[in-house]
Length: 224
Image 1: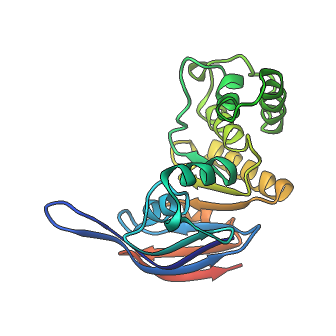
Image 2 (image 1 turned 90 degrees about the horizontal axis):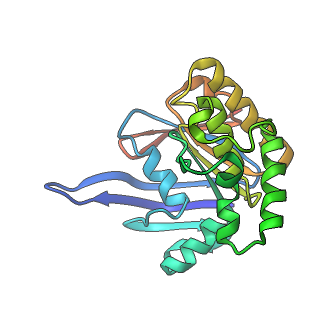
């Protein structure tokens, strides 16, 4: 499902910084994988490359057999739209839209009819146990509820790949545990491939595989 072949990423500045150095790994369909490592180890860079949000300096990233390097910007947008759901630490909800509207936004952008968008958004909010918060704005929700809305939005197309960047990092421990349990439950029910970047080893150890990065290199790959 996800293959990285000798992937490197450098960032230019006053001096060049290598965020990833010839990383090769394969993540199979249906896996639930955590990516761990200290700040600056390359975790978020790796996630951005897998998600098509950035391009590698060298090497190749393949998603479902398709090489991202050969795609135009429009082609990368198509891959993100059709195959990848993103969950971010800080939710990234639009403050003037209700829960229902935030979840439905990606579907409107795909040209779905209003009635179809409304039905899918309601279904997803029920799935994340927020059927009673359909018309609430983000400021009227707790942190955990906002993250549930963000997860519902990420699942709006039932993506085969779900990428989560510190999904519990902005939450208290109890709420974080609830969100992780929800992600695990959705992973089991929907069969999506899940990749979670985290500093929290409690989160990491709930995944079937943990990949550790340090200074842009894979230093450990543990399967459970």
